Image (cartoon, rainbow, N blue to C red; front, side, top):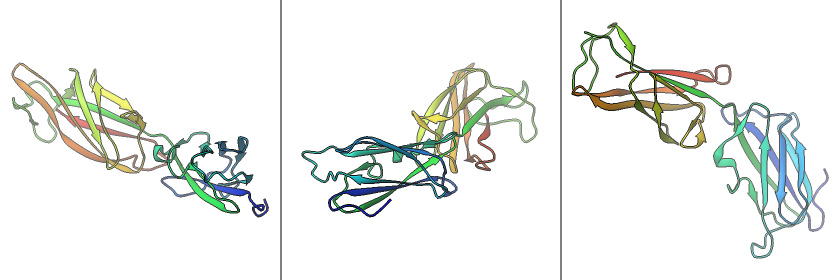
Length: 219
């Protein structure tokens, strides 16, 4: 595309993998809203798409912003890059090229298993672990609450039957390549207060070749 016209603006967007910082080719980018008609295009090998000939919309009182979104097979957008984020809700000035970026990632799953010492394994009433390294264990099948947190998100999940799997946390997709801390607790039974010491693990360990991670918590 050529340079901006006398009053027209241009939006140039780059779509990249959030973890690898590599371009994503053949992603569909939609430009909607604003004073110009809706448009869509696919990214090139460099992960870029250009929308020329846009009517400027710098006057916040009379014109609506442009919203930019991207979709690609097997990817989701980093929530912080969805409109109304400043990277994707745009106001463009006349004769300018507005450059922005949309980060995406492959969804990941975190599998949490709960175990406890087997009968006679040495569980200590009032919480904590017992039995020592190598002690026999069995699944902890009582209803329990699993807590998960990272540098950017936190939430809690209900575990039944000794395990829980999730690809979302507090309504948002789990962001890969971050350290997640998992813990668990359950209501007291027979005078025992059940809990698990926190375990921290990078999720996943080999993105994008492995898109799931497993954590075992000893109650």
